[in-house]
Length: 493
Image (cartoon, rainbow, N blue to C red):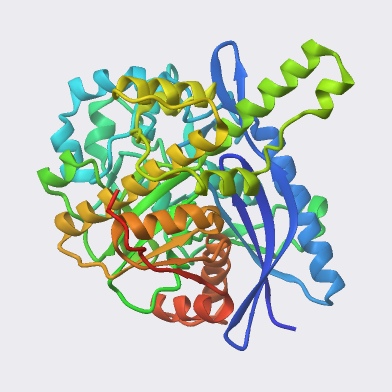
């Protein structure tokens, strides 16, 4: 039996625990536990239900142990990846010191001006190379009232700490904080000093493939895993793991990690820290093996999922008011496949929105905000869900095209193919519109790129996977199927 690896892969709306293996150059994944994740609103602030999240992780690891036992094997190690920028504060005793804020909360945006009164924005970019986003960790930190005696652990590092008792900060996620030196690969302590932050605010850095620690005895007992089970650092920012698993056969590729957000960019050997890059709001985030993920954080399928939630909620409220079984029986179908089919039948050339606008970050009535944005641009968008969905997807494809073009111009790297990985790779209409708008072929898949990257970095650390990133990508290509989209003979959006 080949070695088994547990990947804890958590996004902004859901999470999974997946057991992966590698045999004969082929990687296989088996989902053993799925669970929801989402925003909690309490007294006007937005949080993560971290206690529930950790409980689900333990449930998933217990399921992983049972799955391995049924195969007559064991779990070699555990790797954790999540979204970026958010963190929990831990006191000297290792207890969580307060709630874990959600990046969609407005406290970070409220601190931006104060931060830039102390740190010049251009100077910040010269050091960190980080895209300006109002929820970056540095702004959230500036909003904290009391950091005395506490350390900040980014979400995957916090989960690893609870499993092992060891405090570390994995580098790919550290690079999203605004407190990390993109060239030196170390903490940018000058910014911590400028903001009056403790010098030991974050634990020491660790690279993907290094061992964080082994399971605490009580965690081993609760999960059924041996206390010798390792927790290994992977690309703990989920995009870092996803990009590691792009099945590219040429270095001249762009990638779109498409999910709640869209991470659109190219892979480089060194950061681009020019003023032009800063003004275009590109980011230089750390990838696996010291690579640079040169990208922009573009709006994503959050606009679609939040629109669907609004429509569902609106229908439920109308049905409840009507109180009639006959009305309930007339409920329209809001399945995603049917919505996408209807959107594909919409005429091209419809209105576009700026998918990156701050107005679309928070939860709420997304279709109304989209219609308002279209109206402000001098056009109109009806209330039909199909029209709204087509507007979202046309706008995303247009943003992807702009971003890929800018990434090439700013980095000097030429692109001849675009790889879309993650959940958005299943959206045939989005993939085709992306090929049409960029004029480049699109390779869609794998859906589970993040989990594959997570598992393969663990497997490499265990000595059962190839060493180079290119060879790991060859394993992904051999292990998954891709769908190819050619640009249609249509005007560029």
